[in-house]
Image (tube, rainbow, N blue to C red):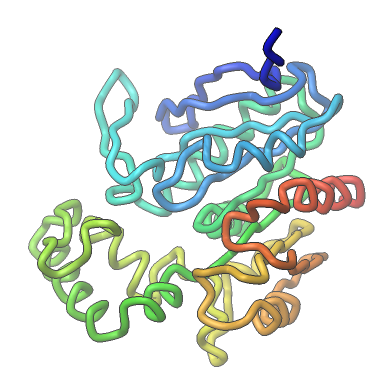
Length: 292
């Protein structure tokens, strides 16, 4: 008889944010968990992207709420209010809407009965978790930042300032002429990182609201990061392919600029996804939750 594949109990959920935007999610783990981790996925990703880490976090008292925030996939649509269709996806989302998304997930977890809540963000989800914690931060014990890389610094390394500046000029022209949600033309910017004008400026101007981890500019004070007052765990991938410098200087930057009680850990021999170190990551998160 063939061996049955491993399965984890989970529940499909619908999160309705304070602004009445509907988001799909999965509640992984015990239905009546004492604590829950709200998982915020990265740029163009989805609730399924780090299921292996979520699975490793789950135990008899801990659930993980993964959900599609408004930045899921590249281009998507969602419902708001009375079934009004709205633009979603990494190409079209407004970064500051992350406050509404995360608030909706937290309220859902609280109504589900979890008493101890944590917000964990991966990649660009780290910027969202940090931004939310700085602007609100209510109702959680702490935040976890996994692979918190600067999107601007990563693209500067891979593409170069000249091409970014050309695309930024196009983005600002579209915004100025009232077309903030028009995509940057493919002959100016690569289709694989498609973005509308307002999102491109937010991601790649170096001064948008989501440019929070400014380790690439030693003269800049990271105001949003320093406004966070919740205990913070930073997990860096030693071989992160989106880093523009080695992990140790980035770790030192976080240690020097996070004002809240914090711990910074470099996970050895892994890339941005933490593949192969899921149990190690989950163990670090569990230690953090017990201490917070």
